Amino acid sequence: MEPLISFKGADIRGGDNVVVYGLDMDVAKGDFVYIVGKVGTGKTSIIRTINAENPLAKGHGEACGFTLEGIKGRDIPRLRRKMGVVFQDFQLLMDRSVWDNLEFVLRSTGWKDGHEIDKRIDDVLEAVGMTTKAHKMPHQLSGGEQQRVAIARAVLNSPEVILADEPTGNLDSETADGIMQLLIKLNREDGVTIVIVTHNRNIFDKYPGRVFICRDEKCLERREDEVIDIGFTI
Image (cartoon, rainbow, N blue to C red; front, side, top):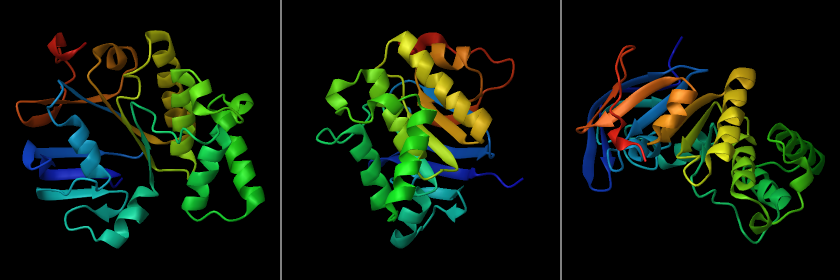
C-alpha cells in the first residue's frame, strides 16, 4: 500500500531554521501516529510541512497524493481539502454559533446545496456528541465542547487524515480522555488516519499508536522495546 504521508531524507524548517534533519517517515492509511518531544524540537513544524504551511527545506515529501517539495500555490488548497486540522486553542469563529462555524467551512469549500449542508452538519455534530449544542456560541461551551466542535469542523469534508496539534493541551485529564476516545473512534470506525503532536506522555501511553520521537534535531520512530525519557512530559 502506498503511504498516505511520506518523507525521505527531508529537512524540516521551523521559521528560517532547519529544526529536523533527514526525516524518514511513512504513514499509511488508517495509521494512528504520535509525534512527541520537548517544546521546540520540531513537532509542529512537521505538521506544518505536511499541510504545506511550511516549505520543505530539502529531500522528498508526499501527502495525500501531492508532492510537497515545490508544490504549486494552486495545489495547496486541494491538498488541504484532504486534511482536517485540530488545534490546541480550537480556533473557532467566536462571533458565530456552532452551526454557523460549520456552515461557514462548508460554503467556503464549495458546498452550495442547503439541504446537503444541513445534513452534513447534523451528521458531524451527532458523531462528536454535540447535536444539542448547535445553537450555542463558542464562549458558552466548555473547553472540551469547543474541541469537539473543532473536530467536527475537521471532519466536515471527509478528510483522509486529521492533523491534531496538541489537541488535549488545554484540557483537564477527564476531558482529554473524551477527546482521545473520539479521535480513536474516527480512526477505527471511519478509517481516518490520525497524526497527533503532543508532549504529554500520559496520552500516548494510555492510547497506543506508532510513536515518532523528536530530539537532537532528528525525528525517529520508537523501537518496540524503547523506553522514552519522561523528561519532556509536563
